Length: 108
Image 1 (cartoon, helix red, strand yellow):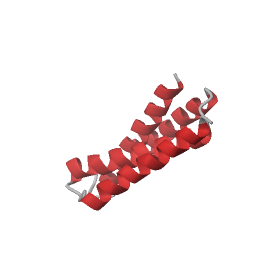
Image 2: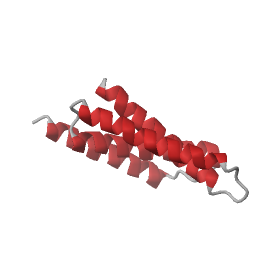
Image 3: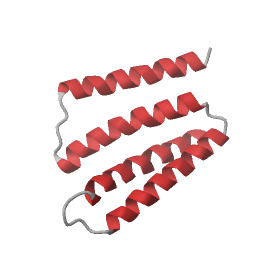
Image 4: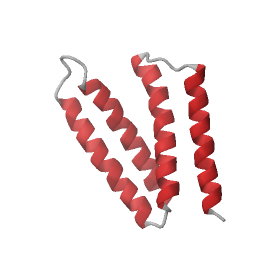
């Protein structure tokens, strides 16, 4: 169940960040700010549940950050036509590799 909570934390944080991008647009509807606040509160709530379930902080935060960065970069490319260069993709791969190292190190 802790992994489902972590997935919830990741998805709600990404949704909040994408909502923040929309809320920052000139003339944007005020409703986007509700999505920002709700999303971040939900993300920290889910992260708290994952940690309470026994997930190690370093592992949980590393996965949350890495997957969040990757999903946000991909979604912003699709939704907002923002750049996603080969160098940026390499960065995402390196972040994932770093999180894998943290996960492997935590199991020893």
